[in-house]
Amino acid sequence: TIAEVDIDAPPAAVWPLVTDINMSAQFSEEFQGAEWVGEERGVGASFVGTNFHPSIGEFKVPSFIDARDEKAAFGWRTSDVDNPGARWRFDLEPHGSGTRLRYSVTLGPGPSGITMVIDSMPDKEGRILYRRIAEHHESMRNVVDGIKVLATRMDGADAKTLRDAVDRFKDKL
Image (cartoon, rainbow, N blue to C red):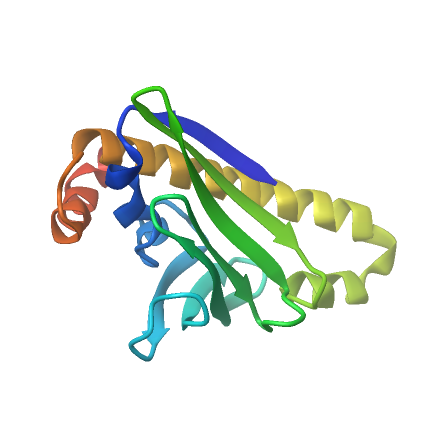
């Protein structure tokens, strides 16, 4: 699934937001935050995300950076580098004087939390996948809309200023 938005700010203003692994937690009901594993931040770096879903409670997901193209793309695979449970990615494209931000997820091919649910109710696989993709899309839409507000208001600000702005603006998003 994909969520996309045009932002009236250059890619340089959007980039620090999409590469802050905790930014999405400000706008997502499921994603609660993440911690880097080690000092590396480029392709091959890893972090552990903490999520919460009402059906299964809190769970942690190891993630591995697989794309980091300055001011153009930032992405990661979950669970297993070679057989990911999902692949998440932000793509930034210059669009007029602003940026087109695309946030995408591809589920599989490896197992994930949804695999366990489907295995327990294989006759409901279609409905389970439909609902899960809808949940992801709603959350992703909230994230890109939140990034749009922050990038537009904070064009040129540093990462700390952006995080402070999230705290100030989150009730208005």
